[in-house]
Length: 121
Ligand code: SF4
Ligand code: SF4
Image (cartoon, rainbow, N blue to C red; front, side):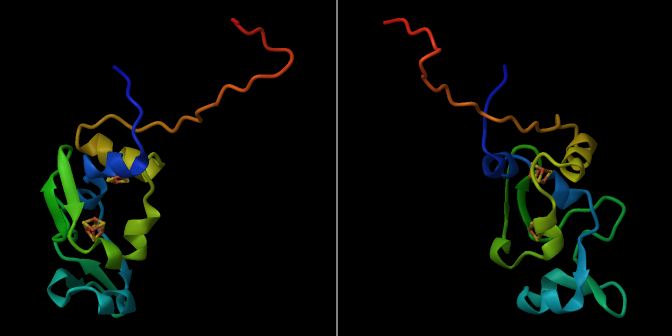
């Protein structure tokens, strides 16, 4: 059965991208994050702990991927985290890796009555 859910709700039951990519960012972004959540990657880049490994999983991700998740530092998440949008190609790649079907974005067309439209009553 197909269902319609918002992108935000989809993410709350997913979390795949937080457990698939290496989440790296310019080091200065990490200054507002909990220091024990961040590790240096290069001279100018840092990454979220847990994501620079063979089976990545961000240290800030709570819950079970594909069921119910939340980000424990959502307000201070990196630009890389914000880059992935529900339904985009990165999202699809991460979801596929976790055995989840890709999201599809649909435009809901609201019916509008006009003179050419046959009405029932
Ligand atoms: S993979 Fe897509 S749906 Fe899942 S949390 Fe990331 S952006 Fe949201
Ligand atoms: S900081 Fe939050 S949004 Fe970013 S990868 Fe980690 S759990 Fe996901």
